[in-house]
Amino acid sequence: MIEVKNLTKRYGDKVAVDDLTFTVRPGAVTGYLGPNGSGKSTTMRVILGLDRPTKGLALVDGLPYRQHRAPLRSVGALLDAGEVHPRRTAYSHLLSLAATIGAGRSRVHEVLDMVGLNEVMHRRVGTYSLGMHQRLGIAAALLGDPGVIILDEPVNGLDPDGVVWIRHLLRSLAAEGRTVLVSSHLMSEMAQTADHLVIVGQGRLLADVATSELLATSRPRVVLQTPRAAELAPLLAGAGAVIETCAGDRLEVAEIDNETVAELALENRIALHEIYTRSTSLEQAFMEITQSDLEFLGAGGAQLAQGGA
Image (tube, rainbow, N blue to C red; front, side, top):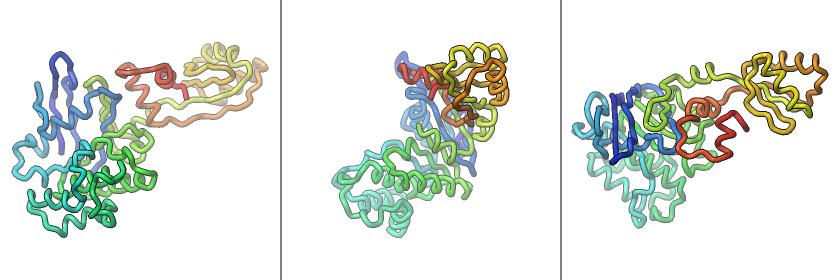
């Protein structure tokens, strides 16, 4: 279990984490989400004892990371897959790590097989692709057979097969009763992988919720195409709809069902060329929660934050 209690971390005048409290429980994959600059990586660094908190606590199984007698057997972590000497082979890298925790060669071969690097384990790491670096970092995280696993953006650089592979890996680790905390910017993947979500913005907690619950509470949209969109929009608003997008011949509205939209258009003799209900995605729910906490938001991002495609 990971417990973050009233955690604050400042770097000079900048507050990276602001009085943050959440718990990551065993037996589930917890997705740790937030916009750029929201404090995700800083939180992970504090949990792993790489940065000291300004205030508050970060505990792993009831202890600060530094107090674990065999930390690599307690916690496996991947923060930066590039932190491996490029002239080393994957096998020699893992073998040196194994020596520090008393693991044997058999365990090195086991994790290399687990991440699919057996055939290239004697190649120098400097020749690896980004996806192969990620697989090696995950192998190192799993080397000590830890009960707690922390992965920062592990999907980066993986091909589609690799993305499916890590999804199954994370879920299988959680099914074994391990505590799994993973950050990612791929909302569609988190929707399929994470059982629970912790969402932060500007270092503050925005949501601590089951994935299914978040999706159930976010509103679906009715998407329609009509040459008289500008005329139909105020009529829908008068019927209680929230206008998310009105551009050209395209309308996207919430808080109304497509039957009501179709009936209102028919009453006013407005032709509809297309109408359908778009189910809520995790990306939409995420944007609704974090839109006021984005550190960088360009014109395209502003449209997305307002529900645009």
